[in-house]
Image 1: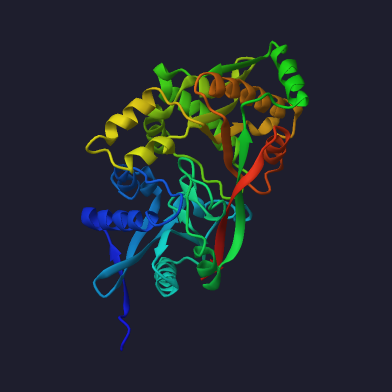
Image 2: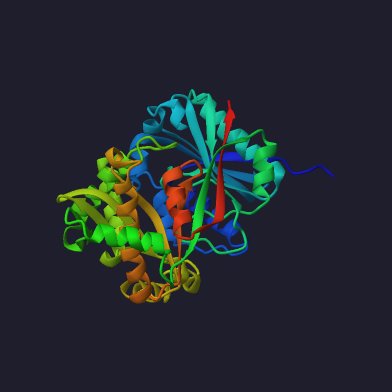
Length: 385
């Protein structure tokens, strides 16, 4: 009996993007511990008219078919800003990416990777990184450790067998990302408490919550610090002005001022820390659907989130203070203030910090000092084209 051939079809337009998203949702539903995300949000991420990533990126979406049945999907993308990054920081000229990798079997996976690679070659690329879905700031890397527990918001969650398929297609690890699990119900070690108390006595330092009444201005302060603090990191791509405004709009419903802090030195913002209650705890209840009653569950949760889990996706200190005692002091002060609020106001018992580059010694030292342990690992792969 002749095996039905696999065909790879480029997709675009509203119907094509919807089919692409719905296929991914079908695959995700079969992954243990996966948390269904809002379909409307997933559609927005692949919509050139909605996601400002497309202002500086070329993107092609593909769906694999075996006969008439869709059996996989993948994206291929080129971030023009990433092309301008020095090669020693992981990106640079000639670097394209793949993402949104889902496949029914290894044969389909190989065909999808080949299609993405072929498109990138046609665009003049000489190297591919992935999976990155779709910006480095969205869901970078393939989950290779931590399949046994549910992901937090904005973290990818993939079947364990994808690792063997990608590596079998000639990909080698380029960078490891990790997250740290942190119990927050009790006080941090005495060393951290002493550092925090010392900072509290320093009249030059002020740790303040964000002001939601002028939130876009606050986001600009935060992302200015982020663009400076992370500028030498592997994989760093700066936020554009449009992306800053977009991020402010998307983050606002999840922002609780007690959980987002800006550190000032002599009145000048020099560091920040963002913490989100884990909205995935609510999305589990809605099944990723707003209708008929999911919107009510989500709205109630957003207004008054109560749950066990918090996620710290971003923190940073201006580069001029890196490798200084002040940098770690500001970090510990923000962490302790937010810990108190997370426990006392929101009833949280644990937090997840990350992702963190596996060579970011400063952040790793902070996570280790406050008692964090690695609970997830992601790999970004590379391959010459």
